[in-house]
Amino acid sequence: MFTAAITGTGVFTPPEVITNDDLVTAFNAHADLFNAQNAAAIAAGVVAAKEHSSSEFILKASGIERRYVMDRTGVLDPARMYPRLRQRSDDEPGIMAEMAVDACTKALLQAGREGAEVDLEICAASNMERAYPAVAIEIQRLLGAGGFAFDMNVACSSATFGIHAAADMIRAGSVRRALVVNPEITSGHLEWRDRDCHFIFGDVATATLIERAEEAGQGFTIRSTRCATEFSNNIRNNNGFLRRSRPDGLADRRDMQFMQEGRKVFKEVLPLVVAHIGAHLDADGIAPDRLKRLWLHQANKTMNDFIGRKVLGRDPEPGEQPNILQDYANTSSAGSIIAFDAFKDDFAPGEMGLICSFGAGYSVGSVLLEKF
Ligand code: CO8
Image (cartoon, rainbow, N blue to C red):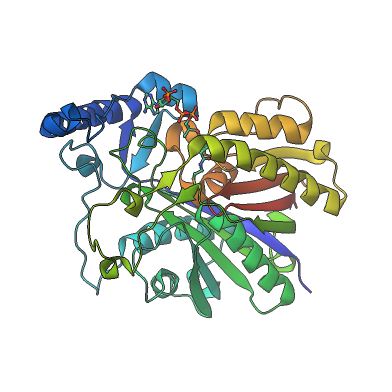
């Protein structure tokens, strides 16, 4: 048996930013357009008028101030409200692979490794741009890596579930070095025309390099990982390959994009996460006060404040539970890894922290780390 360790992380940040004010201006113009186009049906009570969004609500309800996206012009066009991405030929890198390779290259650089030294890539994200060939295999080729690669999807928990799988393979010795990469183009499946959720997500890619601690000079030992799932329809997207075979075929149906019962998610996921972290620490005999930091999933500031308080049994000190969601919004599986990447350099050997992600499924994944 070997000891698995995280030795590098990387973040690809898209070049374009949308502030809450940008978003609200575009949404409100869209709502006015919609209401004018549907005036008769609205007056007859057949269609509901769209209400305006507000920056104040977004900040108060979520803590989000801005988000990065791969294209802002399409998202902010009131007559369109989704990204405009160029068609790529099958012979050039796909957009997910391109974002992923940037993040992977940064993770490899941090660890002083090359792509050819990696023998497993897991592309773990909440949506894939195509069914096959696996995006992970394209990333493997672009990095010049050997071994094997595969895609996996556990929505917001994809990164921690990917780390869990890779760490187990490294411990067992079947893999020497693995990249878990999370290219999230959430702007492609967010419903920007719905004020209840239009502010929630942003685009990004993160990568985590995992290798044998015995062969690494520095990093974070993965002491243990823990994953759990429990079925819920409260976060759902019904798009998929059977779409054209349904009676309404390619109709612009609301459920083809991200849908959630936000209040229910909030109330149901919080106790799950708190119990999950508590059970993980208990199983390892680690008291919560041994943790220097919690790197939590980045969905909602109030949610994170609550989890921090419950896990630590007191209000977290500044820096114990850092948020990046004010700048990136919810980036699905990538959020906790962005936080880890940004807030890990002050760890001394022996200090511990916990990465935890949670979301659709429901799913919760946690990774207990110790600096060496
Ligand atoms: N502007 C102004 N008012 C608004 C707006 C808006 N934009 N939106 C809603 N309102 C109104 C509502 O209509 C409501 O009015 P009323 O009281 O009259 O009915 C009022 O404001 C309050 O609305 P909510 O109850 O919805 O507000 P909340 O305080 O619950 O906040 C949140 C909404 C922020 C969505 C909150 O519920 C939340 O964060 N919940 C948890 C969500 C979460 O963590 N989800 C995880 C999803 S991520 C995941 O699993 C990955 C999925 C895959 C990725 C998908 C990528 C696209």
